[in-house]
Length: 609
Image (cartoon, rainbow, N blue to C red):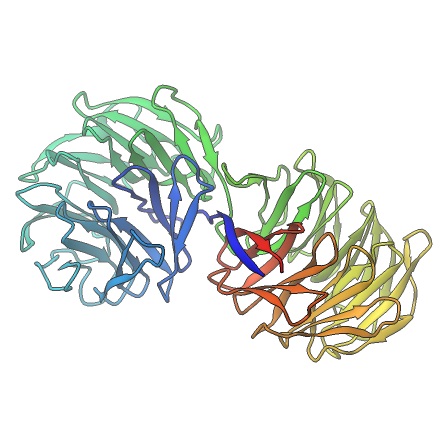
């Protein structure tokens, strides 16, 4: 048995309100760079479904930049570490690691020779450092600021020049190499978020939360003009600016929810783009990139907006997805669509991943989505907002009805129009089409639930005595029998996942002690006890459509694919996700999708023995 990774639906860039996001571009123009969690994401501009990740950081990554040569990437994290790694091989071999200061790295810039790096951020003793990438030797001093430095830029030709900007409301200008402080520019009246040299080195610009954009001479650092004085300029703070490849135009992204295109020579706004008709907080534009013919801007929500210079107004394309950990996943067989829910309450629908995941329309969950379950063209969901909701698969929108679970929900199972939830107050509740038809108070802590394929039996896993209890669903699926008709107790830890096989013969039960047991449904005896290759809590267990295999995802970051016919043979997808694997589903007998704490979805092709 073997596997290959077929696709990666990457997470969106991490964003923080009030903080700029510095996107990186590939010198060849094919890819762009950003970070989410501990990962650096390398994503194709033309087809964002093509993505890879670098997972070498042990702390949250914050920024990444290609060297102009294209052979290396430098990435920084919240602990002040800069890792320089190879881009030419799949292993991304580490070249050097340097601790530049004791705090968050906000921006990184290479010189045009791909030899020297300036890194800036929030340190205790210093806010910036200039060094050679291969030996980490100092090549000057980044000084003159009294607060965190938000961005830096190096002139891409000789004579070497560098600029930095800071929360102390100044822009500092340096000569190099070695880099030394020359002067401090005090044109801004609020935090300065971004500075960028033009590709030809003739000018640089600064942008700040005062809504101002200033243009300066690239060699001497003298002020040339205030671009933001032009009519129709931004009305809010400016987070990010990017130059056109020919150094004649400038792209700016603002807290006012708009993206503007400036003609630098004419000092005029030539185009305005607005991703939303009524911009809210999540529509603030916090980062951008001009890469070849691609103009992109990043919303605070994580949406990546593509713009066409010839068509002002709305984005020509919007790539959506999760920014936070994916906590639930299910598959709608009839539409071949994946549905995923995340820690922040968002639910997305995925087909090919080319434009990311479609937002589900309507009022959704306000906190973590705990479970998603598919049945008859509907997706049922429960969340930590103590609400059960329903999504119409065809319309990809929430139904009008919602139902309170009364307390924090733990488990959800559906069959046809019938849904059963288990809650932390030791209650099992049955609903049909959103209306409650029965409930049962139990004397244990029900964790997870599953309904048999014929809809007449309910299996309930316990979080305290490790038992699985079975109940009859009677009255046309509208009531649960008052007492369990049987129970099994093979699992050695709290039951964390339950799944009936499609042919109805087996029930797979996973637990917190890394084991997966398979029980025969007729005899309620253990069929398989050898599925114990995980090393931590198992979060998910699902069956293939033909009932010959099962797949599980675990806190240990691995996905295991099991065989019923050969219980000791299995496929181990080690490190399937950077963090915990929170869910797995079969798309067909030979393909699975996994979702994890790293906010990504991965599609795996399997080759069974």
